[in-house]
Figure: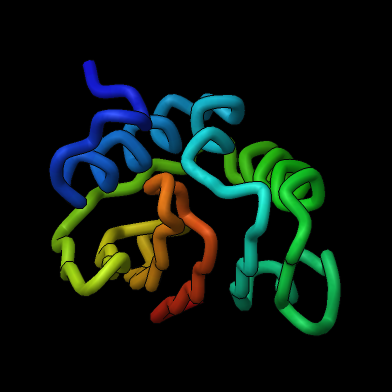
Length: 123
């Protein structure tokens, strides 16, 4: 199995990320993210975490993910497409409550996710 240090393709990272979410493995989920994170999602607003919909601290991100896993115990992602760019990718997948999701992710020099902008249809 790949570790975060030896992903050869964005598809490897994307599948590992989806698998961690589907296993509800918070520690593995968090290993994908940089300490220096800029995470934006309307679900942050929907869950009442803050009105800005933005998290810039890895510990706050972990707490948010923990709350999301508790709120959505049946959460299961289905990865449809991976679009790649320069040090970035967009994951298109089925998300919470079967909504369609697209997440733009930028990767730092270590291959960790450092910026996310999440988009949803049908929330």
